[in-house]
Figure 1: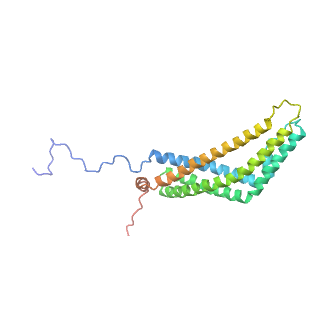
Figure 2 (figure 1 turned 180 degrees about the horizontal axis):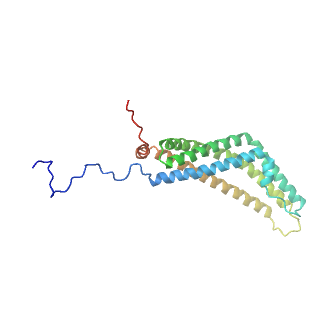
Figure 3 (figure 1 turned 135 degrees about the horizontal axis):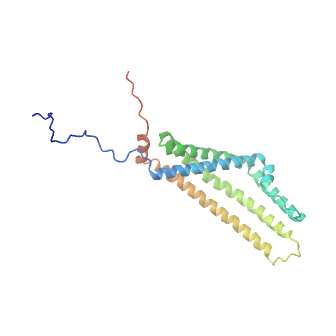
Amino acid sequence: MTADSFDPYRSPTLPEVPYAGVAPSARPGLLTTLCVLCMVLGVLGVMNSLLGAMGAAGGRAFQAWVTPKTAPGMPPEMQEAQQKFQDDVAAVQDKFFWAIVPSIGFRFIAATLLLIGGIQALSLKESGRKVLLIACVVAAVFELCHSILQSLVNLEMMTAVNSYVENLMNAIPQKSNTPPGFTSLMQTFTRGAIVVSLILSYLIALLKVGLYLSGLVYLQKKEIRGRFLAHQPLMPTSVF
């Protein structure tokens, strides 16, 4: 009996194929998290860019639209204080106008790249990985530049807010039972609130930069690149 003869008592031999195990094109959970975060930040960035563009284009008209209206019966001194505050805010915006407008465009580009790169990378497209790499670099640079610009704007805004609080306190009728030093206390509280908001904005910016730099390193790992390359469709070979 030859080796090729049929033996009814022997189990059939299965063809030898390598064990596939986990599909090399499966998307890791960390990659999914990175893509989703970039997509969310991209959507928020696009929305902020559009609102910022409306504010820059509308100028004082847009500011008057978003500013709460004065309540009926408000004393003229308080109305004057509120109007002066609006003028001071508009003056700050005019002072930094030629820096704010490019920042809005920069934000829109970075947010759009994050959104497109996150969507494509979520589908394990190699082009999406490359776009997301560029987006992380652009977004990190934007956050650093925007933090510097925002610091300068907020310093000017702090002066305007302090002046507004002082004028508002001075407009309170003298017959009201305001304790001594109340105006100084309100100015200190307002200044502290602005400083806390600045610190929070810096912390958020640092978290974003950390995310972008981590994504930049993660997307260039050999294993992650292999996942994207394994997911690419095979190019048909020519018969000629």
